[in-house]
Image (cartoon, rainbow, N blue to C red; front, side, top):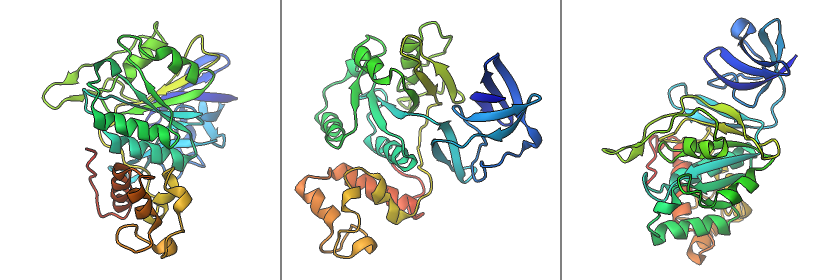
Amino acid sequence: MKALVVRGSRNLFTLRTDEGETECRIKGKILKAVEGYYNPLAPGDIVEVEEGQIIGLEKRRNGFARFNQKGQSPQLLAANVDIVLCVTTPVSPPFRPRFLDRILLQADYAGIPAALVINKYDLADEDPDTEERLEDFIRIGIPVFRVSARTGMGLEEFRDFIKGKFSVLVGQSGVGKSSLVKTLIPDLEIRTGALNEKYNRGNHTTTQPVLLDVPGLAGARIIDTPGIRRFAPERIPPEDVILYMKEFAPLAGKCSYGLSCSHETEPGCKIMEAVHAGVIHEDRYESFLRIKDEMAGVEAYPDYD
């Protein structure tokens, strides 16, 4: 029997079948095709169940993960999704564009389209730096939705965008992911939290990824994930980072030093030329260098400011 993973931790998973929801464990705690991951399954996975135990995993269409520093391996947050929705705010907590750059890179690495959802936009102070970065994301082809879960601002357009899609919400603590989910699913029993005033960042209200059905949106589903204070992409070769940033990828291999170019000092570097010409935003270039150093092990604890 096939079943859909709704949530799970350690070796106990809530599955949805034609007969309803049930809890199952992996038979023998070993499952093929999950080697190398910190966790064996994630919401969105399709598994085979026999006599109340999970015995197999259907091949994934895709998987969105983060690098788990503790386990030194990728931790899967969602599987088989149509789009990654990166939720952030203009203020409270502060706008973190380099955090967004990492989410977008990971989505591209996983082969999943992504969009930015700017919640609490009713509180925006029209900071020119924030607006410039948002317009630059739009320029390079990233959809941006300016919304407010509190006032309803922009939510109609956002609902139309996710209609019929299987989405995963990702973002820092305190940006209001749970509040957004509550606007989409009003009858859902869900806890929302206030910001930690001392540090101006959120407290975790979602403790594990969970798959939810969104009523009235043509079968839309959404995976809500716990707030992430630091997002580390999966480990990829430093020289390949260029391939997973939209406006950088077309320039890969075109520098005078080809694929061996560090894009930092070499003459004839097409990336640096694009930055000087305004084709690549200076902040995106800085993100690129930091992520590349992170992948090389030079920068173990990235600064997202």
